[in-house]
Image (tube, rainbow, N blue to C red; front, side):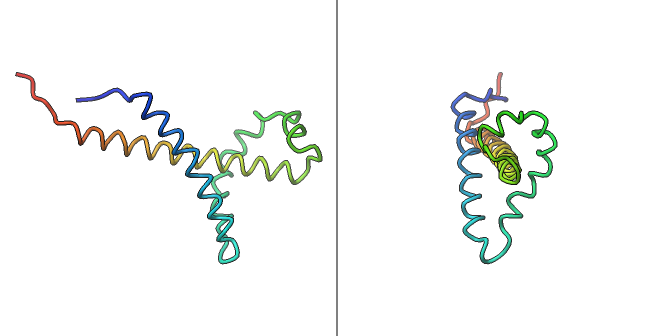
Length: 111
């Protein structure tokens, strides 16, 4: 028996997907003196930078970072990393909550 996903589940998945990468990034930056956790955090950004690069206009980049240059590149890398981890954590939470909900509901057998 399949259940449609509710909006509450969707928005809770989005909120978990947004909060978890921010916390993960803070932990990565806090652990950076001990090992290179920041590189582990931003490595998946290599997958999204080629996609987001052409979408983000230079006008927006110079509005956010007026000097441009390396700071704009770091902004693009961090935005890509947060977007990647947001999608991952949100999808994982959605799948986990959906399966938990499905297991908790007794299956009815139609006569």
